[in-house]
Image 1: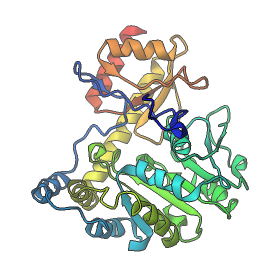
Image 2: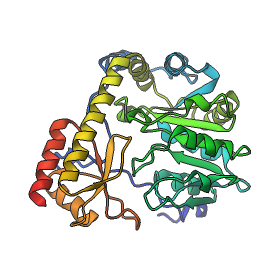
Image 3: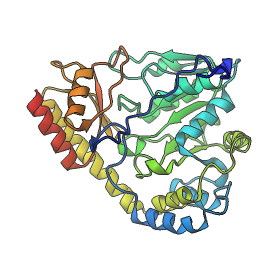
Length: 350
């Protein structure tokens, strides 16, 4: 770092994104992108929007908000679109955490949570998952912290039932509970039904996974109007135009083309189950997944060694060098053909 870098950030450990290699072509199963292109309607609307890129985008995202309200059954003041769900999550750290109200999240979860906390000067508590990598709702009762829960969790892929989420929200009435539903469309239950029952519940989702728009950087938050107004205060104090015209248009197309969305999710879930069964036949242990990835380990091979061996053979998966999970690798569910290639390589190796 330079000699000018602020002391307030000198201890900051940035988030490490998944590899995006340019040196050769890989079967890319490391960043949980969709193996399918955006919906044809999303592509068409994005191309049309490109003609007006000389003009600022609508900071209120009114056309996209209307599409979101139609899809999710919420009112315009209950939804906020952002530049990826990461921006919505960062807004939540900024809006609902401070020196008097620290953050809390699981010890094995989305790696951006501790980064956002440190970036915003917020102390945080990491709550250990149980031995089977599940969340115990009892650990989150009356914490007096702003709580962040990835559901389904990443990188484990395990989902909490809706009644467990409600238990956590109900037992923290004085604090906001943020439920990060980046992967919810692959078989888990959304907490949407609870937003009008609890004024302390905020839900975030992304278009990166189930709607094939990882490159479009589009996400949103849903909650009661007071919480959304808080997030808008942060948005209009940082970058009102954070959602660009093409992403906004692509988002409208992705929400409108419901059949394409459903078909892609169904294909991914079918391929996930096919891959899980095949991995288990090869001796892998797989966490029960409600996401577009599998979290797996093999008793005969260390996680890092397996990751490196696959990389050398042209397949990228994600390995996390953390004590509790270093034996595992996170494997994105690609096309059936991609998974067959992966399985063939693993069979040779093992």
